[in-house]
Length: 440
Image (cartoon, rainbow, N blue to C red; front, side, top):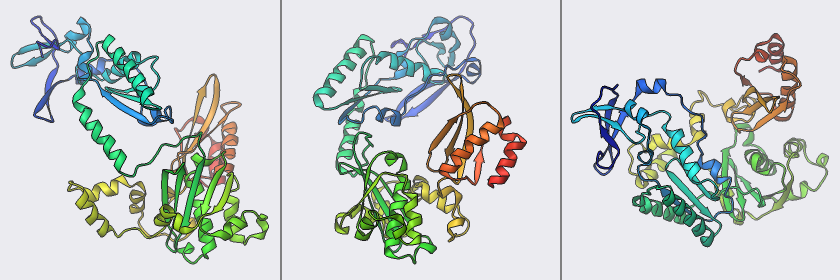
């Protein structure tokens, strides 16, 4: 590492930090430092790191992708002389200081992300997440043009790339092409919901141009098992629209059901429907829905989702043949949010009013007050659906906060629990009386 210009021998008196050796794959090692005391004195800059979800919203029309990996990312960033002395470490061969950015410095991720963003500035369809550079294109020609820009920029900035990971990325692409995957939602395309109900459950799938965006299903509660077929099919529509609310709210959506009477019922006046159906139809009045009949034999996905789930023993036996991990059962439970929440219930609840608060929208929410461009707002977010609502405040009094939250509750329902940061508005007598009156 000294020959490669990463380290330099130190003879003058300096402070020391502990050195560490971390084993890597392929019988390789990584030399790091443990700058616990040094990190206490470092002021960490606040620079946002990108996420995959953030990037995918910017490239809905992209169809061709590639990934470049920066070789030993941190070790391509030089540090100045004074900073270098602070990284001096003691080794069996003597004391050495780092000439490049070492692993372990708490401000290193932000510094590196900023440097990568600066390097890619001005190149559209190219995004860096730490040492990985994602390149996207609408087609092969567009992708290659972006790739050429990135390679030219990397060469001018003397950024070295790691081509050893090309095979791994090719393997990922092969898996994506051969296995069923979910597509990203595109706000410019029409959405379609297919839903179905069986004697035990309801299921739904959200589609765009025949590609699957999301799946949803749930078992029927005890009180719902004796409902008539048309009521169960209507429940499937209510369930699916609630689950896909963020995708379909504010735009015309086609809902396909295999129960033809529902298609006719949505064309008639609301009062012509039975009382229970009226209640459920009112729940979907806020959406712009067009209900269509589609024979059950053409609703393969929704029909499958509405059937009884596999026995846990059968599922574990099947997955054990497909995986090489001894913790398959544990990982299966941990990867399924609904299963995790369901397993935490102490008893089986059959009454609709007694369903687990963590499994229903609007049951648990949080609220906070923030300032943006010299204006004050109160925000509320539903923990289950992640749906956000905020309202501008005339002032920061408890009265204004209460009036704004009343509007939120009127639209989305009163939560059973509201979490706040215990600001003065939320700890006031007025707000306590408000919580008592609204029973949360």
